[in-house]
Amino acid sequence: MASNEEILAGLAEIVNEETGLAPEAVELDKSFTEDLDIDSISMMTIVVNAEEKFGVRIPDEEVKNLKTVGDAVSFIANAQA
Amino acid sequence: MSTPTLKQAPLNENTRVMGVGAYRPDVIVTNEDVCQWIDSSDEWIRQRTGIITRHRAPADVSVIDMAEGASREALQKAGVEASELGAVIVSTVTHPYATPSAAASLADRLGATPAPAFDISAACAGYCYGIAQADALVRSGAAKYVLVVGAEKLSDVIDNTERTISFLLGDGAGAVVIGPSDTPGIGPSVWGSDGSKWDAIGMTHSMLDIRDFAAGKRDSALSEGEAAATEAALWPTLRQDGQTVFRWAVWEMAKMAQQALDAAGVTAEDLAAFIPHQANMRIIDEMAKKLKLPESVKIARDIAEAGNTSAASIPLATHRLLQENPELSGGLALQIGFGAGLVFGAQVIVLP
Image (cartoon, rainbow over all chains, first blue to last red; front, side):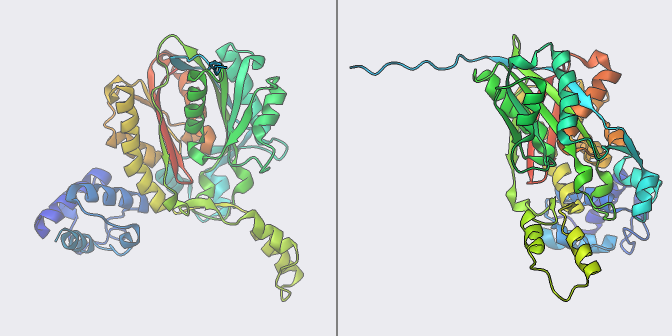
């Protein structure tokens, strides 16, 4: 089970690989679309890679609810629990 | 009286792709053209899809016309006469007759009669389904040479003002001849379907909706103008759930592509080229990453110029790749098609 800090660090790494954004920029209160400027295709790539990294399933209908980095961290933490 | 022993067709051990042909229609649709129909920009479209232009066919050019153009070149490159064909297969979802098939007419035009001829409905996987069929027909001894064509006139089944798929699509045809070979030229097909995602890509309406409307089951409260608009809106056009399709394509299809490599007994390092269905540049890039393709592998990116041409995309991309890089001939290519159904098919082939 990864801690929230570990999930955040892991997500930041995935976001960095997909978009080139510095991992430090990926903070809990940041919105994927508004603040990080991540488009829908990049978002799906991040979701697919997060599923692989954290061993969780993030259904398509759930993706639209993951507005901020914090939403994603909570979802992954709950899914792992 | 003893039962006589049957004779069965002698088997061919190996098959190969003998020649590739292409037909690209004349009308070029740019991203600027697309932006007249949807609120978008050249930059947005390039960034999301990698598409710069697509070819579309004028009204008087049919799926069969395009198939014929591609087939004649494929036969000539393969050095096979139409009369020698043991089967003609056309993969298409845009031949506008449920029956008779595009393939029967194509066979007749080419002079392949009485070769067996049939269409395959497997959308963007149609070409790889055709290769799976042709490989099996030649190896089983049912046919010596088989023509496989992917031909689409997607411009007939799009609504230029919708945003999920229409702006990606183009028209065209690609064809190959499959025949017997002294050495292995087509690896085992990894193919399948997942009908649980039947709704992910497909037409907006069934043909029956048009019939029922035309038969007068229209709402009598509609004015003449509204009735005409409703009738036009009933013409079936394509839609997709982009996110579901993108995820499936990247995630599940990379696994299938890997299975095709494993089944052929080769690795990504052995490949000369990767020729995926030209759905979206981002899918192509992401699959290449997942497959850990080395830099040396040429990746087909015909989509930039041709758009997504469904069943025609892999043979068209193969044709361009060989034209621009003739040294790839004889090398191994991994090809994978995936699309509405959902369906998929993948093989490793030796490039002609």
